[in-house]
Amino acid sequence: MSKKVTIVGAGLVGSLLAALLGKKGFDVQVFERRPDIRKANISAGKSINMACSARGWKALDLVGAGDTVRAAAIAMNGRMMHGVDESLTFQPYGKEGEAIYSISRAGLNQILIDHADQFENVNFNFEHRCLDIDLDTPEASFETKDGIQISHSSDLIFGTDGAFSAVRAVMQRLKHFNYSQEYISHDYKELSIEGKGGEFQMEKHALHIWPRGSHMLIALPNPDGSFTCTLFLPYEGDNSFEKIRSEQEIKAFFESKFPDAIKLIPNLVDLFNENPTSPLVIIRCFPWTYDDKVAIIGDASHAIVPFYGQGMNAGFEDVSILDELMTKYGDDWKVLFEEFQTKRKPDADAIADLALKNFIEMRDLVGQDWFLKRKKIERALYETFPERFVPQYSMVSFTDTPYSEAVRIGNHQDLILDQLAGYEQILEIIDKGELRSFIESNNIIEQ
Ligand code: FAD
View 1 (cartoon, protein in one colour):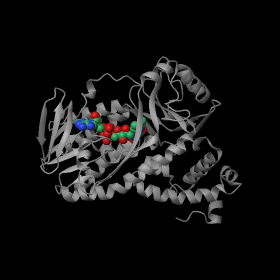
View 2 (cartoon, protein in one colour):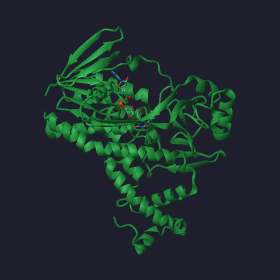
View 3 (cartoon, rainbow, N blue to C red):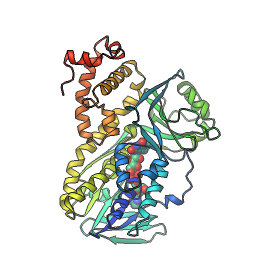
Protein backbone atom coordinates (compact mmCIF):
# COMPACT_ATOMS: atom_id res chain seq x y z
CA MET A 1 0.00 0.00 0.00
CA SER A 2 2.55 2.64 -1.02
CA LYS A 3 0.12 4.88 -2.81
CA LYS A 4 1.17 8.38 -3.84
CA VAL A 5 -0.83 11.04 -2.01
CA THR A 6 -0.93 14.81 -2.51
CA ILE A 7 -2.10 16.97 0.40
CA VAL A 8 -2.95 20.58 -0.43
CA GLY A 9 -2.59 22.77 2.70
CA ALA A 10 -0.31 22.15 5.70
CA GLY A 11 -2.60 23.78 8.28
CA LEU A 12 -3.82 21.86 11.32
CA VAL A 13 -5.78 19.18 9.49
CA GLY A 14 -3.37 18.77 6.55
CA SER A 15 -0.33 18.27 8.77
CA LEU A 16 -2.23 15.81 10.99
CA LEU A 17 -3.35 13.85 7.92
CA ALA A 18 0.23 13.86 6.60
CA ALA A 19 1.39 12.32 9.90
CA LEU A 20 -1.30 9.61 9.73
CA LEU A 21 -0.59 8.69 6.10
CA GLY A 22 3.16 8.92 6.71
CA LYS A 23 2.83 6.47 9.60
CA LYS A 24 0.87 4.12 7.35
CA GLY A 25 3.63 4.13 4.72
CA PHE A 26 2.03 6.26 1.99
CA ASP A 27 4.27 8.33 -0.24
CA VAL A 28 3.07 11.82 0.81
CA GLN A 29 3.78 15.20 -0.78
CA VAL A 30 2.32 18.19 1.10
CA PHE A 31 2.02 21.57 -0.65
CA GLU A 32 1.49 24.72 1.44
CA ARG A 33 0.96 28.27 0.20
CA ARG A 34 2.70 29.96 3.16
CA PRO A 35 6.38 29.79 4.19
CA ASP A 36 7.37 27.14 6.75
CA ILE A 37 5.60 28.20 9.99
CA ARG A 38 8.41 26.53 12.02
CA LYS A 39 10.78 29.26 10.83
CA ALA A 40 8.34 32.12 11.49
CA ASN A 41 8.77 34.11 14.69
CA ILE A 42 5.31 34.04 16.26
CA SER A 43 5.16 35.71 19.66
CA ALA A 44 2.44 34.89 22.18
CA GLY A 45 -0.69 36.88 21.54
CA LYS A 46 -0.08 37.00 17.78
CA SER A 47 -1.81 33.72 17.07
CA ILE A 48 -5.34 32.52 17.75
CA ASN A 49 -5.66 30.05 20.59
CA MET A 50 -7.55 26.82 20.09
CA ALA A 51 -9.57 24.92 22.64
CA CYS A 52 -8.69 21.25 22.10
CA SER A 53 -11.11 18.64 23.44
CA ALA A 54 -11.74 14.88 23.31
CA ARG A 55 -12.08 14.50 19.53
CA GLY A 56 -8.89 16.48 19.00
CA TRP A 57 -6.95 14.44 21.56
CA LYS A 58 -8.18 11.15 20.06
CA ALA A 59 -6.75 12.07 16.64
CA LEU A 60 -3.53 13.53 18.08
CA ASP A 61 -2.96 10.32 20.07
CA LEU A 62 -3.71 8.26 16.97
CA VAL A 63 -0.70 9.76 15.17
CA GLY A 64 1.45 9.76 18.33
CA ALA A 65 1.57 13.57 18.77
CA GLY A 66 -0.77 13.81 21.81
CA ASP A 67 1.88 13.98 24.53
CA THR A 68 3.95 16.66 22.78
CA VAL A 69 0.81 18.77 22.39
CA ARG A 70 -0.27 18.13 26.01
CA ALA A 71 3.07 19.53 27.21
CA ALA A 72 2.31 22.83 25.43
CA ALA A 73 -1.37 23.07 26.45
CA ILE A 74 -3.16 24.52 29.50
CA ALA A 75 -6.26 22.92 31.03
CA MET A 76 -9.35 25.15 31.23
CA ASN A 77 -11.75 23.59 33.74
CA GLY A 78 -14.63 25.98 33.16
CA ARG A 79 -15.88 29.38 32.07
CA MET A 80 -15.03 32.41 34.19
CA MET A 81 -17.69 35.04 33.52
CA HIS A 82 -16.78 38.68 34.03
CA GLY A 83 -19.74 40.94 34.84
CA VAL A 84 -19.93 44.65 33.93
CA ASP A 85 -19.70 45.26 37.71
CA GLU A 86 -16.37 43.32 37.60
CA SER A 87 -17.96 40.34 39.44
CA LEU A 88 -16.63 36.87 38.63
CA THR A 89 -18.72 33.70 38.28
CA PHE A 90 -17.17 30.30 37.55
CA GLN A 91 -19.08 27.53 35.72
CA PRO A 92 -17.27 24.18 35.46
CA TYR A 93 -17.40 22.63 31.97
CA GLY A 94 -17.99 19.12 33.19
CA LYS A 95 -17.28 16.75 36.05
CA GLU A 96 -14.16 16.95 38.22
CA GLY A 97 -11.14 16.34 35.97
CA GLU A 98 -12.93 17.21 32.72
CA ALA A 99 -11.37 20.17 30.91
CA ILE A 100 -10.79 21.65 27.48
CA TYR A 101 -7.22 22.70 26.66
CA SER A 102 -5.80 25.99 25.41
CA ILE A 103 -3.06 25.75 22.78
CA SER A 104 -1.73 28.30 20.32
CA ARG A 105 -2.74 27.52 16.74
CA ALA A 106 0.72 28.36 15.40
CA GLY A 107 2.43 26.27 18.11
CA LEU A 108 0.18 23.29 17.38
CA ASN A 109 0.76 23.63 13.65
CA GLN A 110 4.53 23.65 14.22
CA ILE A 111 4.33 20.49 16.36
CA LEU A 112 2.22 18.68 13.76
CA ILE A 113 4.45 19.61 10.81
CA ASP A 114 7.51 18.50 12.80
CA HIS A 115 5.75 15.27 13.71
CA ALA A 116 4.80 14.46 10.11
CA ASP A 117 8.21 15.54 8.80
CA GLN A 118 9.97 12.81 10.78
CA PHE A 119 8.62 10.20 8.35
CA GLU A 120 10.99 9.75 5.40
CA ASN A 121 8.04 9.15 3.11
CA VAL A 122 6.48 12.58 3.91
CA ASN A 123 7.79 15.69 2.16
CA PHE A 124 6.68 19.31 2.70
CA ASN A 125 6.78 21.85 -0.15
CA PHE A 126 6.25 25.34 1.30
CA GLU A 127 5.44 28.45 -0.70
CA HIS A 128 3.54 26.38 -3.24
CA ARG A 129 0.09 27.79 -3.93
CA CYS A 130 -2.41 25.42 -5.49
CA LEU A 131 -3.80 26.88 -8.73
CA ASP A 132 -5.83 24.08 -10.20
CA ILE A 133 -6.67 20.38 -9.98
CA ASP A 134 -7.38 17.93 -12.75
CA LEU A 135 -9.83 15.74 -10.87
CA ASP A 136 -9.65 12.80 -13.26
CA THR A 137 -5.90 12.30 -13.58
CA PRO A 138 -5.66 13.40 -10.66
CA GLU A 139 -3.03 16.11 -10.97
CA ALA A 140 -2.51 19.31 -8.99
CA SER A 141 -0.74 22.42 -10.26
CA PHE A 142 1.05 24.94 -8.09
CA GLU A 143 2.82 28.26 -8.31
CA THR A 144 6.01 28.75 -6.30
CA LYS A 145 7.00 32.05 -4.69
CA ASP A 146 9.21 32.73 -7.73
CA GLY A 147 6.23 32.45 -10.03
CA ILE A 148 7.25 29.05 -11.43
CA GLN A 149 4.40 26.68 -12.20
CA ILE A 150 4.71 22.97 -11.52
CA SER A 151 2.31 20.05 -11.61
CA HIS A 152 2.25 16.93 -9.54
CA SER A 153 0.30 13.73 -10.17
CA SER A 154 -0.58 11.11 -7.60
CA ASP A 155 -3.16 8.41 -6.84
CA LEU A 156 -5.08 10.54 -4.33
CA ILE A 157 -5.45 14.25 -3.60
CA PHE A 158 -6.69 15.60 -0.25
CA GLY A 159 -7.79 19.24 -0.09
CA THR A 160 -7.05 20.46 3.44
CA ASP A 161 -6.68 24.06 2.30
CA GLY A 162 -9.22 25.65 4.61
CA ALA A 163 -12.44 27.64 4.26
CA PHE A 164 -11.42 29.22 0.93
CA SER A 165 -10.16 25.95 -0.53
CA ALA A 166 -8.73 25.95 -4.04
CA VAL A 167 -9.46 22.21 -4.33
CA ARG A 168 -13.12 22.80 -3.45
CA ALA A 169 -13.28 25.67 -5.95
CA VAL A 170 -12.53 23.14 -8.70
CA MET A 171 -15.14 20.70 -7.38
CA GLN A 172 -17.69 23.55 -7.27
CA ARG A 173 -17.69 23.56 -11.05
CA LEU A 174 -19.03 19.99 -11.11
CA LYS A 175 -22.63 19.30 -11.90
CA HIS A 176 -24.80 18.82 -8.76
CA PHE A 177 -22.16 20.18 -6.39
CA ASN A 178 -24.03 22.06 -3.62
CA TYR A 179 -22.33 24.93 -1.87
CA SER A 180 -23.19 27.71 0.53
CA GLN A 181 -21.11 30.39 2.21
CA GLU A 182 -22.55 32.52 5.02
CA TYR A 183 -20.82 35.37 6.84
CA ILE A 184 -22.25 36.00 10.30
CA SER A 185 -22.97 39.52 11.54
CA HIS A 186 -19.84 39.59 13.70
CA ASP A 187 -16.12 39.96 12.92
CA TYR A 188 -13.29 39.28 15.37
CA LYS A 189 -10.02 40.86 16.45
CA GLU A 190 -7.16 39.44 18.53
CA LEU A 191 -5.98 41.34 21.63
CA SER A 192 -3.64 40.28 24.39
CA ILE A 193 -3.25 40.43 28.19
CA GLU A 194 0.43 40.08 29.03
CA GLY A 195 1.71 38.18 32.08
CA LYS A 196 3.20 40.15 34.97
CA GLY A 197 6.73 38.81 35.52
CA GLY A 198 5.61 35.51 34.01
CA GLU A 199 2.56 35.35 36.36
CA PHE A 200 -1.03 35.14 35.18
CA GLN A 201 -3.10 38.24 35.94
CA MET A 202 -6.36 36.24 35.97
CA GLU A 203 -7.31 32.64 36.86
CA LYS A 204 -5.05 30.43 34.73
CA HIS A 205 -7.28 27.35 34.37
CA ALA A 206 -10.34 28.99 32.85
CA LEU A 207 -11.70 30.30 29.59
CA HIS A 208 -12.59 33.89 30.48
CA ILE A 209 -15.75 35.41 28.98
CA TRP A 210 -17.17 38.90 29.10
CA PRO A 211 -20.72 38.25 27.75
CA ARG A 212 -22.42 41.49 26.72
CA GLY A 213 -25.35 40.66 24.48
CA SER A 214 -24.46 41.65 20.94
CA HIS A 215 -20.72 41.66 21.69
CA MET A 216 -18.28 39.53 23.61
CA LEU A 217 -14.65 39.29 24.70
CA ILE A 218 -12.95 35.99 25.52
CA ALA A 219 -9.45 35.15 26.79
CA LEU A 220 -7.49 31.87 26.71
CA PRO A 221 -4.28 31.26 28.73
CA ASN A 222 -0.76 30.75 27.29
CA PRO A 223 2.11 28.98 29.11
CA ASP A 224 4.12 32.26 29.36
CA GLY A 225 1.50 33.86 31.65
CA SER A 226 -0.27 35.84 28.93
CA PHE A 227 -3.83 35.46 27.65
CA THR A 228 -4.83 35.62 24.00
CA CYS A 229 -8.08 37.58 23.80
CA THR A 230 -10.62 37.66 21.00
CA LEU A 231 -13.12 40.49 20.67
CA PHE A 232 -16.31 39.71 18.74
CA LEU A 233 -18.32 42.71 17.53
CA PRO A 234 -20.85 43.30 14.75
CA TYR A 235 -19.04 44.60 11.69
CA GLU A 236 -21.59 47.41 11.29
CA GLY A 237 -24.22 49.23 13.34
CA ASP A 238 -24.11 50.23 17.03
CA ASN A 239 -21.05 49.15 19.03
CA SER A 240 -19.47 47.75 15.87
CA PHE A 241 -15.98 47.64 14.38
CA GLU A 242 -17.27 50.17 11.85
CA LYS A 243 -18.23 52.65 14.61
CA ILE A 244 -15.47 52.16 17.19
CA ARG A 245 -12.37 53.66 15.60
CA SER A 246 -10.76 56.58 17.41
CA GLU A 247 -8.67 56.24 20.57
CA GLN A 248 -11.45 57.89 22.54
CA GLU A 249 -14.12 55.54 21.15
CA ILE A 250 -12.03 52.44 21.82
CA LYS A 251 -11.28 53.45 25.41
CA ALA A 252 -14.84 54.58 26.16
CA PHE A 253 -16.25 51.32 24.79
CA PHE A 254 -13.91 49.15 26.86
CA GLU A 255 -14.35 51.24 30.00
CA SER A 256 -18.12 50.88 29.88
CA LYS A 257 -18.26 47.23 28.74
CA PHE A 258 -15.09 45.50 29.93
CA PRO A 259 -13.86 47.67 32.87
CA ASP A 260 -11.71 44.95 34.49
CA ALA A 261 -10.17 43.88 31.16
CA ILE A 262 -9.07 47.38 30.11
CA LYS A 263 -6.93 47.63 33.27
CA LEU A 264 -4.99 44.56 32.07
CA ILE A 265 -4.48 45.78 28.47
CA PRO A 266 -2.43 48.99 28.76
CA ASN A 267 -1.60 48.88 25.03
CA LEU A 268 -5.26 48.36 24.03
CA VAL A 269 -5.45 51.18 21.48
CA ASP A 270 -2.26 50.07 19.67
CA LEU A 271 -3.39 46.43 19.57
CA PHE A 272 -6.86 47.45 18.40
CA ASN A 273 -5.43 49.52 15.57
CA GLU A 274 -2.60 47.16 14.58
CA ASN A 275 -4.39 43.81 14.62
CA PRO A 276 -6.62 42.94 11.68
CA THR A 277 -10.38 42.55 11.89
CA SER A 278 -11.37 39.22 10.36
CA PRO A 279 -14.72 37.80 9.27
CA LEU A 280 -16.36 34.55 10.42
CA VAL A 281 -17.75 32.28 7.75
CA ILE A 282 -19.82 29.10 7.65
CA ILE A 283 -19.21 26.82 4.65
CA ARG A 284 -21.50 23.93 3.79
CA CYS A 285 -21.07 21.82 0.68
CA PHE A 286 -21.58 18.35 -0.78
CA PRO A 287 -20.23 16.02 -2.10
CA TRP A 288 -16.85 16.07 -0.41
CA THR A 289 -15.20 13.46 -2.64
CA TYR A 290 -14.67 12.82 -6.32
CA ASP A 291 -14.59 9.20 -7.46
CA ASP A 292 -11.75 7.31 -5.73
CA LYS A 293 -9.37 10.20 -6.35
CA VAL A 294 -10.06 13.46 -4.50
CA ALA A 295 -11.47 14.41 -1.08
CA ILE A 296 -11.83 17.68 0.85
CA ILE A 297 -11.75 17.54 4.66
CA GLY A 298 -11.55 19.99 7.59
CA ASP A 299 -12.58 23.60 6.98
CA ALA A 300 -12.38 23.01 3.22
CA SER A 301 -15.63 20.99 3.43
CA HIS A 302 -17.18 22.27 6.69
CA ALA A 303 -16.02 25.60 8.13
CA ILE A 304 -18.01 26.65 11.20
CA VAL A 305 -18.08 29.59 13.62
CA PRO A 306 -15.69 29.20 16.58
CA PHE A 307 -18.19 29.40 19.46
CA TYR A 308 -18.24 25.72 20.42
CA GLY A 309 -14.46 25.43 20.07
CA GLN A 310 -15.01 22.54 17.63
CA GLY A 311 -13.82 23.55 14.13
CA MET A 312 -10.37 22.04 14.50
CA ASN A 313 -11.69 19.19 16.65
CA ALA A 314 -14.17 18.30 13.90
CA GLY A 315 -11.43 18.46 11.26
CA PHE A 316 -9.23 16.21 13.40
CA GLU A 317 -12.15 13.81 13.82
CA ASP A 318 -12.38 13.60 9.99
CA VAL A 319 -8.84 12.17 10.13
CA SER A 320 -9.76 9.62 12.87
CA ILE A 321 -12.76 8.50 10.81
CA LEU A 322 -10.67 8.15 7.65
CA ASP A 323 -8.31 5.98 9.69
CA GLU A 324 -11.18 3.72 10.84
CA LEU A 325 -12.43 3.41 7.25
CA MET A 326 -8.93 2.58 5.94
CA THR A 327 -8.86 -0.28 8.43
CA LYS A 328 -12.30 -1.40 7.25
CA TYR A 329 -11.91 -1.01 3.47
CA GLY A 330 -8.15 -1.15 2.85
CA ASP A 331 -7.38 0.13 -0.62
CA ASP A 332 -10.97 0.45 -1.84
CA TRP A 333 -11.02 4.26 -1.89
CA LYS A 334 -14.26 4.49 -3.84
CA VAL A 335 -16.28 2.73 -1.13
CA LEU A 336 -14.23 4.38 1.60
CA PHE A 337 -14.82 7.93 0.31
CA GLU A 338 -18.51 7.22 -0.24
CA GLU A 339 -19.01 5.97 3.32
CA PHE A 340 -16.87 8.81 4.71
CA GLN A 341 -18.96 11.58 3.24
CA THR A 342 -22.32 9.90 3.86
CA LYS A 343 -21.49 9.20 7.50
CA ARG A 344 -19.83 12.52 8.20
CA LYS A 345 -22.01 15.12 6.48
CA PRO A 346 -24.93 15.01 9.02
CA ASP A 347 -22.41 15.42 11.84
CA ALA A 348 -20.73 18.39 10.14
CA ASP A 349 -24.13 20.03 9.69
CA ALA A 350 -25.02 19.32 13.33
CA ILE A 351 -21.87 20.94 14.76
CA ALA A 352 -22.30 23.94 12.42
CA ASP A 353 -25.77 24.50 13.94
CA LEU A 354 -24.58 23.90 17.51
CA ALA A 355 -21.71 26.36 17.10
CA LEU A 356 -24.09 29.09 15.98
CA LYS A 357 -26.44 28.29 18.89
CA ASN A 358 -23.53 28.46 21.33
CA PHE A 359 -22.71 31.97 20.10
CA ILE A 360 -26.01 33.13 21.57
CA GLU A 361 -25.35 31.14 24.75
CA MET A 362 -21.86 32.58 25.22
CA ARG A 363 -22.49 36.21 24.39
CA ASP A 364 -25.86 36.54 26.04
CA LEU A 365 -27.38 33.71 28.04
CA VAL A 366 -24.41 32.82 30.29
CA GLY A 367 -25.05 36.05 32.21
CA GLN A 368 -28.76 35.44 32.80
CA ASP A 369 -30.28 34.01 35.99
CA TRP A 370 -32.67 31.55 34.36
CA PHE A 371 -29.83 30.17 32.27
CA LEU A 372 -27.63 29.72 35.34
CA LYS A 373 -30.56 27.94 37.03
CA ARG A 374 -30.89 25.53 34.09
CA LYS A 375 -27.13 24.92 34.15
CA LYS A 376 -27.32 24.09 37.84
CA ILE A 377 -30.15 21.61 37.23
CA GLU A 378 -28.25 20.10 34.29
CA ARG A 379 -25.14 19.63 36.41
CA ALA A 380 -27.12 18.05 39.25
CA LEU A 381 -28.73 15.63 36.79
CA TYR A 382 -25.30 14.69 35.40
CA GLU A 383 -23.96 14.03 38.89
CA THR A 384 -27.03 12.08 39.97
CA PHE A 385 -27.52 10.04 36.78
CA PRO A 386 -24.06 10.01 35.08
CA GLU A 387 -25.04 7.10 32.81
CA ARG A 388 -28.43 8.42 31.78
CA PHE A 389 -27.94 12.17 31.57
CA VAL A 390 -24.75 13.45 29.93
CA PRO A 391 -25.17 17.18 29.11
CA GLN A 392 -24.87 18.13 25.46
CA TYR A 393 -21.75 20.22 26.09
CA SER A 394 -20.08 17.20 27.71
CA MET A 395 -21.11 14.88 24.86
CA VAL A 396 -19.61 17.29 22.33
CA SER A 397 -16.45 18.15 24.26
CA PHE A 398 -15.61 15.08 26.34
CA THR A 399 -16.83 12.16 24.22
CA ASP A 400 -16.85 11.20 20.56
CA THR A 401 -20.62 10.74 20.42
CA PRO A 402 -21.52 11.72 16.83
CA TYR A 403 -22.47 15.42 16.73
CA SER A 404 -25.87 14.62 15.17
CA GLU A 405 -26.62 12.23 18.04
CA ALA A 406 -25.62 14.93 20.56
CA VAL A 407 -28.15 17.26 18.91
CA ARG A 408 -30.92 14.64 19.05
CA ILE A 409 -30.28 13.82 22.72
CA GLY A 410 -29.81 17.52 23.57
CA ASN A 411 -33.26 18.37 22.18
CA HIS A 412 -34.79 15.75 24.45
CA GLN A 413 -32.79 17.06 27.42
CA ASP A 414 -34.10 20.59 26.78
CA LEU A 415 -37.63 19.33 27.42
CA ILE A 416 -36.55 17.73 30.72
CA LEU A 417 -34.71 20.88 31.81
CA ASP A 418 -37.70 23.09 30.93
CA GLN A 419 -39.95 20.83 32.97
CA LEU A 420 -37.64 20.81 36.01
CA ALA A 421 -36.94 24.55 35.82
CA GLY A 422 -40.71 25.06 36.06
CA TYR A 423 -40.75 23.65 39.63
CA GLU A 424 -40.32 26.56 42.02
CA GLN A 425 -38.56 24.50 44.70
CA ILE A 426 -36.11 22.78 42.34
CA LEU A 427 -32.92 24.51 43.51
CA GLU A 428 -33.76 23.75 47.16
CA ILE A 429 -34.41 20.12 46.26
CA ILE A 430 -30.99 19.95 44.57
CA ASP A 431 -29.26 21.64 47.52
CA LYS A 432 -30.86 19.14 49.94
CA GLY A 433 -29.56 16.27 47.77
CA GLU A 434 -33.12 15.07 47.07
CA LEU A 435 -33.05 15.27 43.26
CA ARG A 436 -33.04 11.50 42.70
CA SER A 437 -36.14 10.82 44.80
CA PHE A 438 -37.87 13.87 43.28
CA ILE A 439 -37.20 12.67 39.72
CA GLU A 440 -38.17 9.09 40.47
CA SER A 441 -41.37 9.96 42.27
CA ASN A 442 -42.39 12.34 39.45
CA ASN A 443 -41.27 9.96 36.65
CA ILE A 444 -39.29 12.70 34.89
CA ILE A 445 -36.38 11.04 33.06
CA GLU A 446 -37.61 8.30 30.73
CA GLN A 447 -35.27 8.19 27.76
P1 FAD B 1 -6.67 25.89 8.04
O1 FAD B 1 -6.21 25.87 9.45
O2 FAD B 1 -7.30 27.12 7.51
O3 FAD B 1 -5.44 25.48 7.12
C1 FAD B 1 -5.51 25.57 5.72
C2 FAD B 1 -4.08 25.62 5.18
O4 FAD B 1 -4.13 25.57 3.76
C3 FAD B 1 -3.35 26.90 5.55
O5 FAD B 1 -2.07 26.60 6.03
C4 FAD B 1 -3.31 27.70 4.25
O6 FAD B 1 -2.19 28.55 4.14
C5 FAD B 1 -3.27 26.57 3.23
N1 FAD B 1 -3.79 26.96 1.91
C6 FAD B 1 -4.90 27.67 1.64
N2 FAD B 1 -5.07 27.82 0.31
C7 FAD B 1 -4.03 27.17 -0.28
C8 FAD B 1 -3.64 26.96 -1.62
N3 FAD B 1 -4.35 27.46 -2.66
N4 FAD B 1 -2.53 26.23 -1.87
C9 FAD B 1 -1.79 25.71 -0.84
N5 FAD B 1 -2.11 25.89 0.46
C10 FAD B 1 -3.22 26.61 0.74
N6 FAD B 1 -11.42 25.24 16.42
C11 FAD B 1 -11.40 24.49 17.55
O7 FAD B 1 -11.50 23.25 17.49
N7 FAD B 1 -11.28 25.06 18.78
C12 FAD B 1 -11.20 26.42 18.93
O8 FAD B 1 -11.12 26.92 20.06
C13 FAD B 1 -11.23 27.24 17.77
N8 FAD B 1 -11.15 28.58 17.87
C14 FAD B 1 -11.18 29.35 16.75
C15 FAD B 1 -11.15 30.75 16.89
C16 FAD B 1 -11.23 31.55 15.77
C17 FAD B 1 -11.23 33.05 15.94
C18 FAD B 1 -11.33 30.96 14.47
C19 FAD B 1 -11.42 31.81 13.24
C20 FAD B 1 -11.35 29.58 14.33
C21 FAD B 1 -11.30 28.76 15.47
N9 FAD B 1 -11.34 27.36 15.37
C22 FAD B 1 -11.34 26.59 16.50
C23 FAD B 1 -11.47 26.71 14.05
C24 FAD B 1 -10.13 26.24 13.52
O9 FAD B 1 -9.23 27.32 13.43
C25 FAD B 1 -10.31 25.62 12.14
O10 FAD B 1 -11.38 24.73 12.14
C26 FAD B 1 -9.04 24.87 11.73
O11 FAD B 1 -7.96 25.77 11.65
C27 FAD B 1 -9.26 24.17 10.39
O12 FAD B 1 -8.07 23.56 10.01
P2 FAD B 1 -7.78 23.29 8.46
O13 FAD B 1 -6.45 22.65 8.43
O14 FAD B 1 -8.95 22.59 7.86
O15 FAD B 1 -7.75 24.72 7.80
